[in-house]
Image 1 (cartoon, helix red, strand yellow):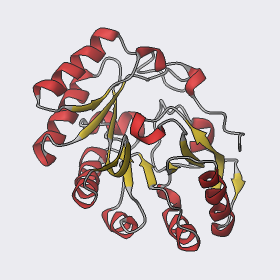
Image 2: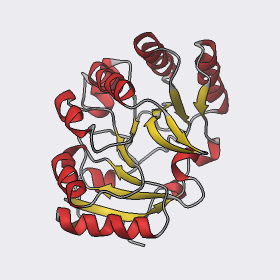
Image 3: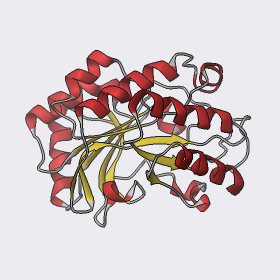
Length: 258
């Protein structure tokens, strides 16, 4: 496995990061090709260190000893078989988080269910044309929706105090100027799964050098419109962000192992 960062991370949703941080493992590579990817330096041409399952198991134990609330596999899809072998070697006593684009094969996903406690999928697009243009995945809306439906069915929400022990938090990054995509994405989630969902509405879009459209940050009024649409749909379990989170300082240092 190619890995670019192994360290506690403090900028996930509160029931993931808590006070002690989420024990993140940032993998190299990605099954998506998003023009606006903040992690493009590792997702397009990964140049990180190679780890065997045994070596990663040792790193997981080290993170667990630091007191992190969970082990958080970030962009893990392309390494799913090796991740299962890693967890067969050592299964920590904290939840396993699968932090994914949502673009998942259902059979692969079913094989992960015994290993994963918390799914943190994106639902990026409801618009197939937009998905193809910006991420080269025209079938994303249906593929990701099927995957998320399975995650929600298999992992009902369980909290341990303020921390999520099991469940699904669905992330949606609002793209500036493409509010219809966001509104319809929420519509589809509610139509398919219902209102008993936990949604994280993300305002952190940051223009990157390779992205010419969108090429600006989200406006506060745009963010308020999507939050209001979610509330009108009957969604009540909603995480929101400060608009100030759309800064490059929040992009992790991918040469770090703490």
